[in-house]
Amino acid sequence: MSARREARGDQRVAPCVFLTHPISTHADMTMSWLPSIFNKKTSDTDLIERYKEIRQIAIQLNVQLVKMLPNNAAPECGKKLGLIKAGTLILNNDDEIAILYDYCLHHYRRADKTVIDRYLETTPPEPESDEAILLETMRRQRFSIFQVEESDYPKVILRDLVAGGTLDIVDIGLSSTARPGHVLVGRILPLPEFNISSGIMIPLPEPTYRESIAPIVEKFLRNANQGDGPRFSPTHEASFVAQVIRVSLQAGGMDNSFYTDVEP
Image (cartoon, rainbow, N blue to C red):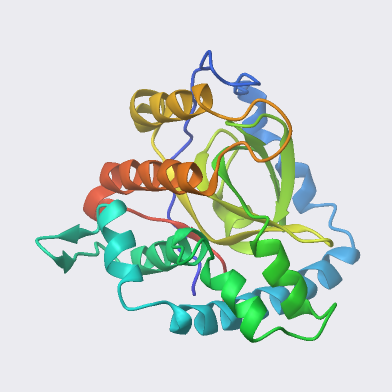
């Protein structure tokens, strides 16, 4: 899947009262990535090669997982994401099918099991292999709304606008194009070596985030588990993710562009 080199410009978002941490709005953040261009570490080469290796395995796994999806998975999930109109799947661009399948893999359940769960039961990979680690990591995925704090190729530091806190991910495409202040919707896979995205991050215009996404987050957080354990049940998480993706896609319309992983 090729990285699309389109961005929506420098997006600055005003802090929202429901956020655990206010969104950074310092102007000097826009230049913080520049010094890294002239101070690359030799270890970056090994990191990039390992990232490409993991990404290729993830792509191959996704292909196998998609083949295991029931026939009604895509239509059902497509309807929730607003991609089904009059019984027909309508896509504004090719990347939207990847968004649909990503949602299917993580949130379509049969007998309370995702296709990832069923794959691990019926076709378990070699223990401790990259495939096994990736699959287990996919079960611990983290979908949220993020803001870019710093981009230092091939890494990006993101602030989680739902759960609070920051995390860094390795992503060649995103680190090449995203700038501090950009708001993104997407899924993070917390691998033991480093974090990666599940494949696509959706950029959000500031008005969409403030007027449409923030109320969704606030509504779900009011009913979230405040104690130990997962914040949302699988059903509530699937509903939250679907609503956020649906609004994000509708905001872009025919002009949607996404941050996608690069092809190794």
